[in-house]
Length: 122
Image 1 (cartoon, one colour):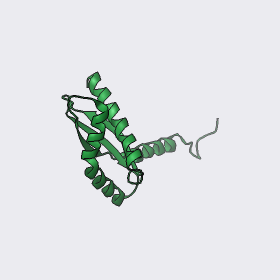
Image 2 (cartoon, rainbow, N blue to C red):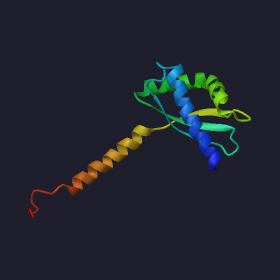
Image 3 (tube, rainbow, N blue to C red):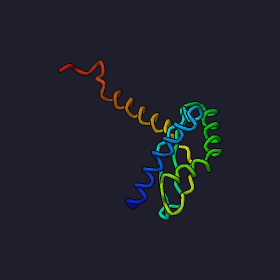
Image 4 (cartoon, helix red, strand yellow):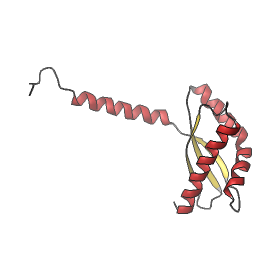
């Protein structure tokens, strides 16, 4: 990824998050913008988000983000000052699955490092 793509991605991630918090406070309470990646031609940005809550909350967030996508594109476009405003494509990140895997690995390491009752004390 080029430096320009990285800068645009970082700016889009920050601005989408900020706009969500300012304009749609109640709807965005459980949504966290996790990442943004820009296509090489700067015409599309995939914005990753995570939702705290159950499947109902995730579905609500998906519907909400789909409904505000055009307005969000317009607001972000005013800030970016690029030749053309990139399309925003929201994709859900499954952060909870990753967190659960890391926690399971840490638990397993802790069990392996714990001394057994039969081992002699030093």
